[in-house]
Length: 339
Image 1 (cartoon, rainbow, N blue to C red):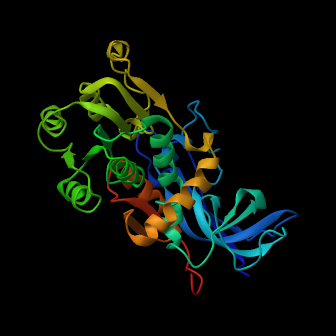
Image 2 (cartoon, helix red, strand yellow):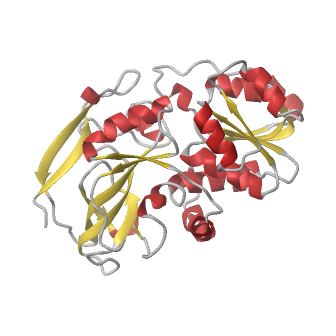
């Protein structure tokens, strides 16, 4: 058993983009699990845009991380000790346990990952929260149909890449929006999108008009800002907008004024926000559906991997800047033999 646990806590609430000084690394003895609890060591840590919101004390759908509290995050880990009959040492589990090398969790907050199977990191990306978010957003709100035009922002990211592939499976024409030529090439050539617009180059309005000559029926929103404004101008009557994320404004102290929504009435547009945890049943549903697609290669995904718990703060900065390509993961510990 290890002696020391390392954790990254929130030292202060950031102003604008998070900085390393907003975090602090603490070391303490590894705790022992109590009744119904499980001790795990972290193998993979997921880094996601929502974490920036948890660093602020602005009222939201979830409680913020307390000053001095461990930063929140989903992880894959190995069970070291268990005081619950549902888990045994050596089990590999996924759950929300935070930026730590070792964690104590209630057994009910963990899900066992059956081995052998997909790579462990996939359970934090394409088979985890991002993939489930894309699935729930498309299934419950977007509902793409054959012949429709679907636009996905942040199309090369962990959520957008899956959302677009699901729309393609439904028979829609799918246009991605991404930042950079390399991302747009990957979105088209690897993910199979019909087109991809680089929002960093040229006139976004004209590029979208060219990519979506018949307007837009479904928009999967991950970005906000100028990208949202350009897409909203091309929405068709009865379009559906999945409001999943607004990463363009996460570092802002005050949210910018919203668009004029008069068109929503005239065009009878449905705009609905979503938080994937509102429908927890979607997680197991998605894993069962998607695991065979990942295994046969028909559901494509990509990861950006950095090493060591200390790299987590900079990894979050990169995600908020769009510096990641696909799902951002921190490799915190070694994988078990045969995993």
